[in-house]
Amino acid sequence: MSAPDRRFVADADAHRRDQPRYCPACAAGLDLASEFWEGDERRFYCWCAACDWTGEVTTTGGTARGHEPEH
Image 1 (cartoon, rainbow, N blue to C red):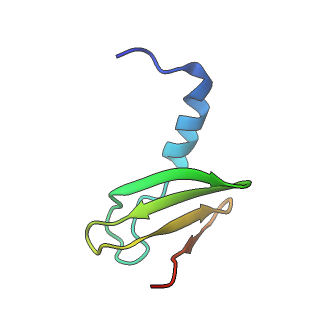
Image 2: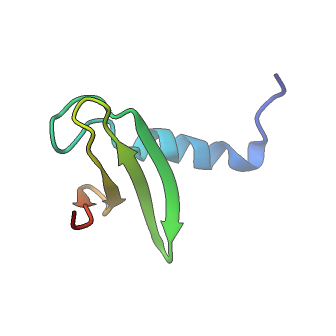
């Protein structure tokens, strides 16, 4: 395996630091937290296998807010 590209080291560190770790519905560990950008907002699309919850979590500095589409 080659060394990581140094241009992306800070981004990878921020992802590991900021990604949600626990499901907001059942508090189990999340099975997926995929980061993407929408405009200027960083978002994480998340999935929990324990309760089958899916939704988006948006970072807001020291706190996080969640968004779940209507079912």
